[in-house]
Amino acid sequence: MKKSNAILYDVFPTPNPHEEREQLYYPRSVTYGEQMNDDELKEYLERNTRINSSQFVGMIEALKQEIPEQLLRNKSIHIRGMGTFYLKIGVRRRKDSNGHWYTPKFTNPDAITARDLCVEGIEFRADPTWNRMLIKEKKTFERAPMRHQVPITKSELLQFIEEMVKKKGHVTVRDVVICQNTTNYHARKLLEDLCKGEQPKLYREVIGHSYIYKRFGK
Image 1 (tube, rainbow, N blue to C red):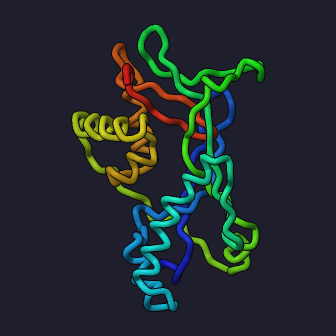
Image 2: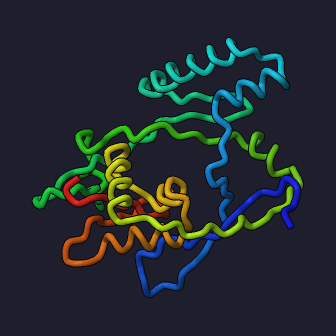
């Protein structure tokens, strides 16, 4: 029986590049597509606070324009009580002799030059005081119901992957779970199968603590 206002979670395997190591698992909160968009947030704030619609829209648009500009000026943006926006940079991808993209690895810090770098985006770190607003709440947890494996043809999957690669350069298991409405296990198996065979369609890279999947030649 579902608990009222329980926090949904599921259990996921950690990426295991070294197959001989024991597989570990970790819990993660899940939404399964449940999301409040900006229009819904605007309506909620109008009903429950003194902020009107035009104020909300004006503030959001101003932040969207100003935060990236200030980050590119070597500044971080701290909103007291909420957190800090900062610039994320990384190593620029290169193409090998076969036309495959890869991210260079460096063992000598002096070998990294300005030409090796690129802007990867914006990151946000919440203030401890904001985090504590969640931590002090005594909430119950409930494991999210299992998702059913939704049949998907290979052509449909490849079309979806192509769209994701054009959009952000890669696809993840979570992308397939959310957009194809399938299970984590099924999504991972679909992507792993495309990495196998004499003419694999995908190859995978370890980024941080997760895998991303890329198309050959893209």
